[in-house]
Length: 331
Image (tube, helix red, strand yellow):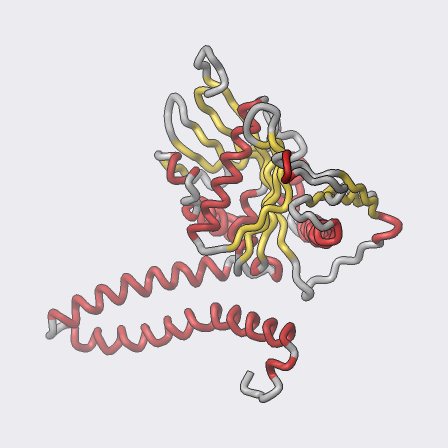
């Protein structure tokens, strides 16, 4: 980076800087722990005679325990794709209007989580529900280790509540499916025969109407014949930009399918996700009536107040899944 011609090639220079930042994110915390270990040994020598040193040792110990916890958590994200950004797709399932509303609530939950962590969000595709909410939507959340943190969210999410759309005030159950795929960069190679295996359809993007309505067939839908994977993008007015984004999404999904073959449980989970309702595999239950709690069906993690979770405070569930998956791998 100190070379005079380093910035002559902006793209490669920015990639090098990004690589350095990622490596520092791994090495930096480890160096910090080593330095803290030395400080602790010094404080231990003075702690018996100096009360101030004893208190400082206690504070440092608590900080080191928290730092070790974070380093261990990052170590669980050891797959090459874990450091990537992620595409988050939410699809309404069984439950009628309630499921469409629930899908929109989930989309907001992930967007709020991204905002809490200063990640960038881009809307890729959204199809509104007939009365309320959304039928399906895709957003991109960009930042380091976004996929690593969110990969356990793939599956069915179930909501139980008094429906605001039921005039009789009855309790309803609604389902929505979440699918997380890594946004791949040039480090990852996915072989796709674009001419023979991929069908491209264009259609007019939906919008608010009036002067903002899209008057051209700029939206793109890609269907991969061998796998049956379908992706679409309509957030840009340019058909060219939508096609480029859709291609990246298709590469991501195909890469994810290939990676899931290394893990029988994840592969089975994606298979059962085709049924978004009763009988499908549920990863988490959100109960708003009569009790109030959120419980993960895999890890058993339970939180008594659902509202902070729905507002994006997801870390307790994301971290519990990462630790649970690590223990499952060691069995």
